[in-house]
Image 1 (spheres, rainbow, N blue to C red):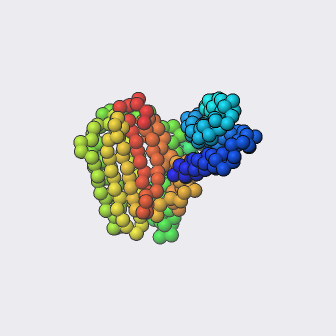
Image 2: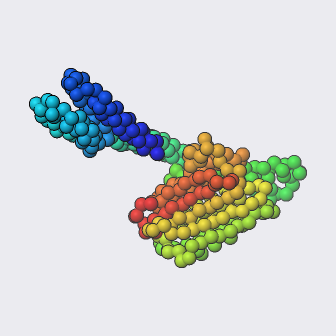
Image 3: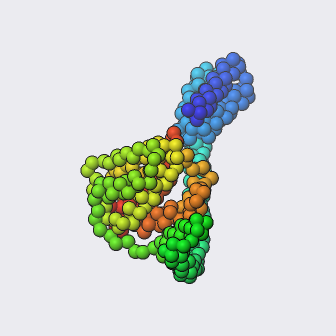
Length: 363
């Protein structure tokens, strides 16, 4: 709208200039040829302005209008100065040539400028993509080094941890400890289990197993995951709702790994709603892909943390390990899919898993 307004104003200015010059011709006596020559050359100004603003077509149209406006004065001067009339008529094709030439140059320069802008945008996009790829490559290198180093360390920690848990079990079975010692043994056992689970998650992340692909029906798989997740609700007033598009095509995946991902997402959604709410699990096909979403009504994730939630050891939970979403992200990438997180319009988060229906077709 703004561009059209500018063009309208320029067109009005061109027309006003033509009318003004024609009036000057009309009010000036025919005998004052030097003034008429000056007025005639003034026509080149609106012609050039129109050509620069509207291209060669605008320049040509303005030149024809200028010639038509100048023609009555030429006919009036024909009786008195016939030679002068011929010179004036010859100038009309010059008007047209000037409008076409100037407009053509203007259009050429405008196209070059637009091409330069498009090239700059493409270069900017390529540069940004290179930056993203470079950051991803650095992150992958760091994670690979971390995985190689820490996987061995995790195995070394597991052995004395098993010994500590075993010793605590032996002491408990003797049955002679007092209440304080029993509480200490319970703490040792619980913490050993927690550390062992942490090491298990870490090893899953550092050295993930290769998926065993098979064609799986989506609906029974989601039912199984939701049944398992219901045990995490406890006494909270949380409702689980399933929204499946019918019919859903089977997806080629590792069902156990996909269950692990979805169970992690649903449990995270439940834990994000300590005051209760609704967890929706939705699935629908998108061409040759399957989209599964876990949508909660919880506290959400701040924008500055949203880009970090898939990084290992990053967590917003007080007792979280920061490995659940990292492992889930890695599993979905193994399947050639994409795991994303975005805020809901009202409240809560929506985690989306986009998988190819057939293994090998990257999502």
